[in-house]
Image (cartoon, rainbow, N blue to C red; front, side, top):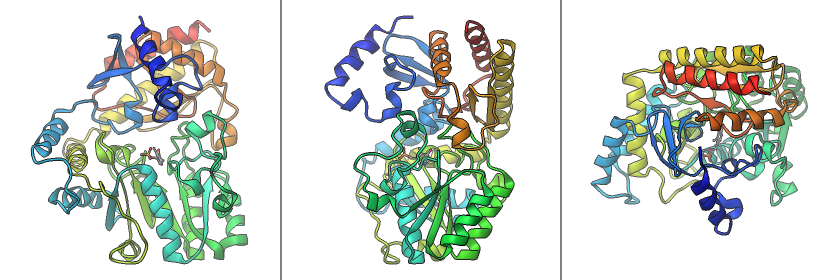
Length: 427
Ligand SMILES: *Cc1c(COP(=O)(O)O)cnc(C)c1O
C-alpha cells in the first residue's frame, strides 16, 4: 500500500489549517504518522486518494450508521437539493425531522434543531440554567460534550488524547461552575448533591460513554443520577449525540428505562450532514426563545438538506430496523477481537453496547476515566497502524469507540478479525 498522495496533501494542509485539519481527532496525533486523505465512501468502505480501500469503523465518528451513500439518503438529499439550499424561513422538512425524533425518543416532547452536537449541549445547559435559575453543571471525567467552554474540563477523546484537560482560553470563571465527578461512582454523586444540591442546575453525561473508549453505565449509577436530580430540582441531561439512534432506535435511555429531562442529539440525526438537536419535556423546552426567554438561534438551523438527510436516515432505521443485525455483527466483532488478543497473549478487554465498542489495551473492566487512562496507548498505536496496512480503518485513538454500520457484512467482520489476529500476533 502506498500513501504518497495522502502524505503530499497533508503536507500542503499544514500551512493552510492549524495542524493540517479542521478537527483535531483527524490528525492521528495519538498514533503518530500521517492521516489518510479520503476521496470517497461506499457502503462499509472508504477509498483514500492513493486508491487504498479500507473497511471503515469510524463511520464519520458515528453518523454513517447506514454506511456511505445509502440509496434512500442519497435520493432524499438529491430531491431536497433541487429546491435550493437554505431559506432562513421555516420549511416542512423541519416538522418531519422533529416529529421523527419525538416519536423515537420517549422523553422528547419538543425539540430544537441546531447545527452540531456542541451547539446542542451548549444550548441544553443554558436552558437547564435558565429553567432552574442555578449555575452549577455536573459532568463526569472522560465524558466529552463538544467544545463548549464550561464543559471542556476533564473532557475525553481528543482532549484526553492531546492531554489538554483544560484548554487555554477557557477561563477559570467559566469552568468554576462545572463540577467534575467520577463516572459510575454513585457515592460521589450522592455526596456532591448533599453538599451542592441547591446550586446544581443539571447533570450532563454520556449514557454509554464513547469518548474515553466505550464505557458502560451501571443501572445503579443511572438511577442515582435520576433520584438525586429529582430530589434537588436539577435537570438530568442525557448527551445522546453519539448513542442516539446508535445503541437503539430510542437511544440509550430506551435500553435502561431511565427518563431524562433533556436529551442532546447529533451525528446520526443528520445522516452525515451537519446537525444537532436538543429536546425534552415540553414545559422546559417552552423556555426557549421565542416561546420563552432563553436565547438560542441559528442562521442555518434546520437546514433543508441536512433535515432531508436526517429524516431519510431515521425513516430507514425505523422501517428497516438494522439493530438486530448490528447486535449480531457487533457481537461477532467483539468476540473475535477478544479472542485474537487472548490467543496473542495480549491483556485486552473489549467493551461493547450494540454496534459501538472499544478494544482496550488494559485488562479492564473500564468503569471510569481513571481506569481508561491506564491503557497501553503505545500498543494501541501499533495495533492501529498494523490494521491500516491490512485495509482496516479503526478510530485513531485508544479513547474513541469504533462503530459497525448496517453496510458491514459478516465477511467484512471476519476479515477484520483475521487482520487483528495477525497484527496482535506480531507484537
Ligand atoms: C460528538 C459528540 C459531541 C459533539 O458533537 P459535534 O457535532 O462534534 O459538535 C457531543 N457529545 C457527544 C457525546 C459526542 O459524542
